[in-house]
Image (cartoon, rainbow, N blue to C red; front, side):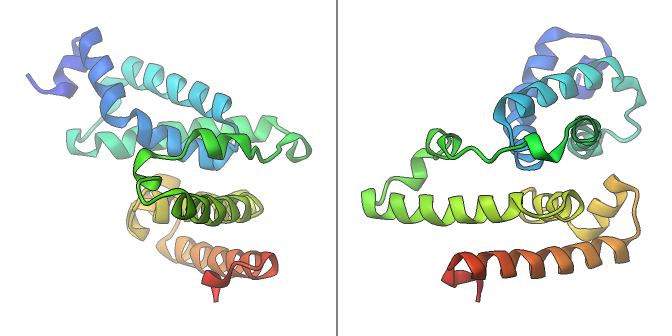
Length: 184
């Protein structure tokens, strides 16, 4: 029996396996969109609960990851509608806590360079409007194709391409203002 079938049978071990397979991916996506690790963790947890409850609505087993992403995106959007943008702050401490081990293997100088560039990029992305931040996150961090993003967001391919283009342009402007030379 495959994972989806086990989930349909409401097997709790299958839910744990689902969380292990897709948890980091969904957390990264949610965190980039809502800018708060604790809120992102709550969204991911809620995403798995919704998925477990509504697994029978999944029409194509091979699209499980996309379906989970869509659930998470909808929960992010819902949360964002409830928030006032004034109250969202960029947290620098999280960047130190979330550095991957493979980012530090080349020594402290490389770690500081990576941290500096990642922090600048992260801050720049957070300055984008949600519609641009969303497509940039899905395309560059989650490596989705334009047609996959348009399916998930229920938008035309041309709309996604336009948002990606404008988002990249805005991101470049933000990075150049901040002095990041790699944006040129």
